[in-house]
Length: 253
Image 1 (spheres, one colour):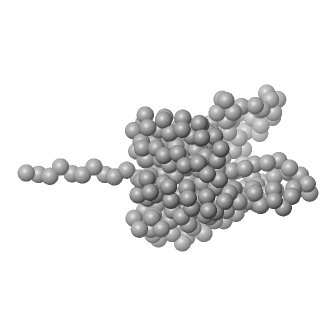
Image 2 (cartoon, rainbow, N blue to C red):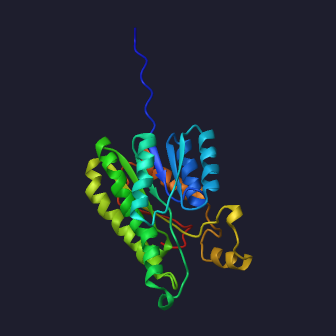
Image 3 (cartoon, helix red, strand yellow):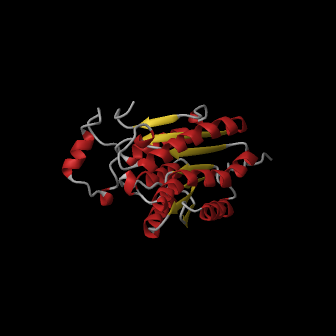
């Protein structure tokens, strides 16, 4: 009697900042693609639990792991919880970020370090925690997020620009070191992206000024950014490594 082939085990993705906007879109997109998902948020558990319920409706197993990615011990705990629940983290999406707007000469050392920790160091700490499992399997995907602050300077956002340039450097270094092991690392650089409806608080004038800088004449959506992440993570994107993919409607080239 012929044996019934075993079902292929699902891979797992850990997404930071997964409770809303781009993070939420990445969670749901990957759930639809057949991944189990570990959803990290820093404070709004209710938002993360809501996304988890949506992911489960798409057939995924979903775990909410709250924690502050700006602290190394928290990054270790978050990754460990996902690994314990699913056996490994095959895909790491470093999406969580802070973008304070504060004059350079008025920013304290603590404020500077906080942005660097969340926007750059977290990607280092989480990659260190997840890479051993990826190496064991000989397969993995790391997707980092930069933004237009990694391309252009931004007055009032010096630490964000520094951190996002660092993320781009980290991406290139990891791509070279771990690409031969079957692990790709890439960066997505979103342009002006319209937040989830409940998050919108910008004035109409401010939004018009933003849209005026985009050749396509509109802001992007979180789903459009998540589509780029899904490509990089898919088998169809397996030959893309060490790249920065700009999703900005032509606002920066």
